Image (cartoon, rainbow, N blue to C red; front, side, top):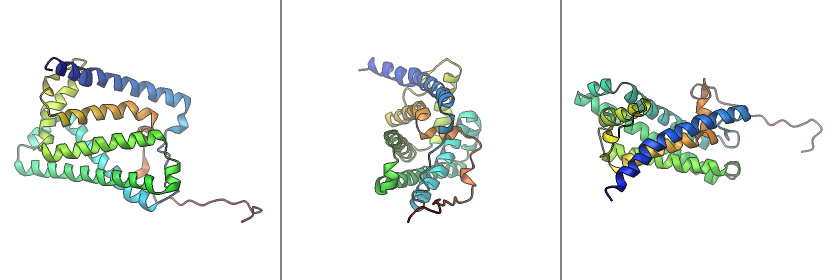
Length: 232
């Protein structure tokens, strides 16, 4: 059993990350060359707008804030640890991260509920859409679980996960940083790699389209065109 664990860790945290990034870059390039106009979320907002707003808007604001937090902790881990040296600042950061994580979860559940309950929206939902929803749900739920039951994540991410990620960047993987991490944390990391790998083949590819005016664009007005001689 003990010999199997290092093998599993090596497979999940050394081989899989590089494989996921290879698939991501190769899949992205191939999709752009073959179908450049599919770099879109294929929004179904025109089919139903109210539930779309209450699902997708909270999800996007929440997930962007959480991702930015992870990126900042990866890029400047020492500054994060210095910030967390004051208990009040640590509490503010942790509570803020949990709030945005819950916002992401609420929005995601709302988006899934919308896809299940509105027949027109469900009709345009593909199998890969459902795969993405399952992966995102597993990722977000595990992230919220980690935030609640393994607190001070900003500190141990900066102290352990960030050095591990930097070791991957330097092509000198070091599992010593995460070998003793709880299983749920390891699951959360593996799910992140999985989402990276499948992104080029799903609607998630729209995150590569920049600039993205989603957060500040005006409400869309959809008008159905009918030819003058077309019968009612």
